[in-house]
Image (cartoon, rainbow, N blue to C red; front, side):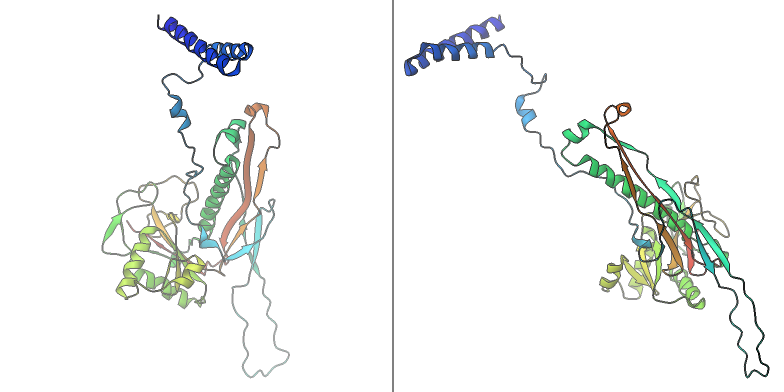
Length: 359
């Protein structure tokens, strides 16, 4: 009944419109054509989804401000010694000449002087091939989103590679020699923040940071170029120490230009959300990348000198299909890769140190 009433209503309205057009134009054919068109228009099906008003579709705004994943700051390794390599380089060799020193003869009484023979050693480290799993970029993705889909996915791939590389560099720079490792000794504790860790950990205090300062001085490590990368919790400890010295409001413009957040006892301080993880032991042991977490794990501050550590970061390679692939339902696959890694420059591990949280 409601459908019939609507039909009669439309018919009466069209008749009135046709009459008005005849009056003003004087052409019964023109008016009749318009009337027929309006009559047929009512039979065109409505495309508006059920229970959705047309105004609701029109009023949706698609923002181009894509909310992307957040990644840690990896600036700590910038400015250190870098080896160059192509994508196919798997190993880097570092010549070593640390042992002994040239013997000095005072007031020689015999010529020619005796000759000594030295055999240099070498150290090698690997450049891992890091490759992201391909991401499909479909035809619909590229047409129906309000941001550049391919550019956004490429940024995600590159950021993931940089994070993985930074963690491998930090692992390579973390010491294993007991004399270069110390556990925190604070009298107060805080909640553990290493992945999978539970319980509390001792805070670091001034004596812990002075240990690294004295160690580097004793080993004749140059002052210029000293750095330390710390987790956020240890940055809290550093700020507390600096305030005790009345340095809580000092200008750090030159440090910020290097990427550091502050300076303590000759070390430029870099902060990263996650640093190297060590086990809980009398002499903590650094855990390999991807190793299973433990409730007793501890984060560490890694001290290093820019000329006594090194890293390799090959050119990033990006691979993207030129044509859509049938097996991906018309999508184009995209991924990226690079070669990279890091190592302490010396076999003796001089030039690095670790301050590890203590349970």
